[in-house]
Structure formats: C-alpha cells, structure tokens
Amino acid sequence: MQRFTKSKIMVFPREIIVGHRTTEQIADLCNRITSGDKVLIVADKKTMKLSGDDIRKILSKANYKVKYRLISAPTVQEVNHVIKFSHKNKSNILLGVGGGSVIDVTKLAAYELKKPFISVPTSAAHDGIASPRASLKHSKGSVSKTAVSPHAILADTKVIYKAPYRMLASGCADVLSNISAVMDWKLAHRLKNEEFSSHAAVLAETASQLLIENVDSFKPYTEESAWIAVKAMIVSGVAMSVAGNTRPASGSEHMFSHMLDHLGSKILLKRKKEKPMHGEQCGVGAIMMVYLHGGNWELIRDTLKKIGAPTTSEELGVSKKKIIEALVKAHEIRPERYTILGETGLTEDAAKKIAKITGVN
Image (cartoon, rainbow, N blue to C red; front, side, top):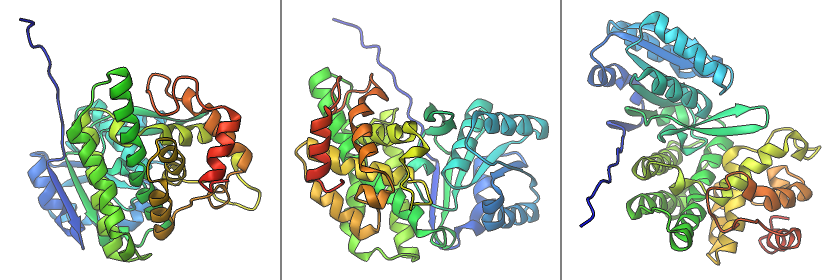
C-alpha cells in the first residue's frame, strides 16, 4: 500500500467584524490578536485622514504605542519601506487601513516580517481585503504574490459606503467573476487532472450568489449595499485560503484583465479620463468567458448592469480593438493555468464573434 504523505496548511482570519461603526472596536480587537503594545498603521494620505487618524487616537487612548507609515503605490519598494520602518519601531502588529493597494502592501510586509496584521478596508474594490494573495504594480502591469491571510478583518460599513460607489461596484464585479473562475477550475480538473477543492469552489460560488440574490436591493451610497458587498468579498477571500491558491477567484477573466493592463495606457478611449478598475475588467471578462463555457452569461451581464458596473467596451473605456487584442493574447498571462482559452488561445475571428454576441463590442 502506498504511504499517505499529503499535507496542507490553511490560514484563516481569526476574527471578522463587519458592520456599523466597528472602528470603535479596534483596541479590543488588537488586545485579542497581540500581546505587544507597538502598532504600525499602514495607510495612504487619504485613508489616514478618513480612518487612520481615528484608529490612532483610539489605540493611543488604550495605551498602545502607535506609529504610521504612508504609502503612495502598491510596489515592491513601498513594501520594503514598510518592512524597514516596522523593524526600526519593533512593531508587534500591522494594520492595513485603506483600499486594496494599502492592504496588499501591508499583507506582504507582514508576510515577510512574520507579524500579524489586521485588514481595515476603507473601500471595497476587490476581494483582496481577505485573501492570502497580494497584487503589486510593475512597469508592465501587475503581478500576484503569495502573502498571508489577515489575522482579523475589521470592516466599518459607515466608512466604506462613503467611498466612491464605482469602487464598490468594481468589487462586486470582481466577486461575480468567481463564476467563470470556478468553471475554468473544474475544466482544468477534468482535462488536466488539476487538484480541485469542492469546498473552496462552493465558497467562491456562494460569494457570487450572495450578490446575485441581493442585487435588487443595491443602491449607491447605502450601508446595506456595503454590508452585502463586503461580506461577499470576505467569503471570496476565504475561498482562496481554503484552496491555498487563487483558483476559486481567478481564471480566464483575470487573464483577460491582466492582459488589458499589460497592453498599457493606450487602451483608454480619448473621452474616458479614468482608467478601468481591476474588478470592472474582470466583470466584462467574465461575461465573455461564461459564454465560452456555455453558461448563463446573460445573468452575469444583467447583474453587473443592476449593480452599476460596466458591461461593454465603451462603458469600460477601452477601444474595441484592444478588447479583441486582449482576448487573443490573454492565454499568455499564466500559461501554466489551464482555462477555457486553452493552450493556444482564441483566434481573432473567434474573439470578434464572442465580443459581438455578448454585446461587449
């Protein structure tokens, strides 16, 4: 008989606190997470004013010695600056107070430092607030890196719902794209015998379903919408912790998004001033990838519309030509990750047909 040698480590948030005015609970949460008294808050200028200053005051009153480090971008350089600053101040715990970029830098620094960290989102633009992965920017787009799940998540809906609604809609689009990601994962399991976790897949699909079932109650700038969205994003992040990788929430639709990033700033339409957000690109990608799988792509499209996320190249702010180019080249992003795009990708004619049928172009 062959000896059983499998082993796996799954790290989950110890506590998840979501709701109205939960910022007030930060000192008690730190008490439960660390026995030390030195806290490092990582934020950017905006999120420090938005929430970081309040957290610093609350912790200082609770006799914590609080330092803060402001970052400007999710880069390796900023991660190294946080690590050095933490070493210098002998921090016992790190708090990532901000959006996805701030939290990604914090979780990577905490991973290298082997220190606990608390995720304190001030917006909800993607499921990175709870995932064990981090995305850093570089000259040709972004790269996903192994990090660590937060020891705890403290999401104050009173803060989050005030962030630009576009960010929340983008985060919801990111979670909805789990549907195509799980389809890709199941396909890779069937065709390539890739290891598959039904528990992780169900969690990822549950996160998407939570949004679909509650989409009619979504309204811009309401705490209830923030509450539903954040819960879905946290479940999505936990699914990745169960899987031990990003498979439950990242498939061909993410490859499409990363290829758009890789193609560069020329993708923007002249009349569109703001770059597309990650979740927005993944949502549009998911419409087309679910179509390729023969799934209910109309449900994805209609849910995105109700939430207020883009469903077309024009709404996304990307030229039709670049949509096709990204579809054709998307399989090059992670060639080791098998998806519906296969190993050779789509032909240009196929890409044009898919974009037309789904209404993206």
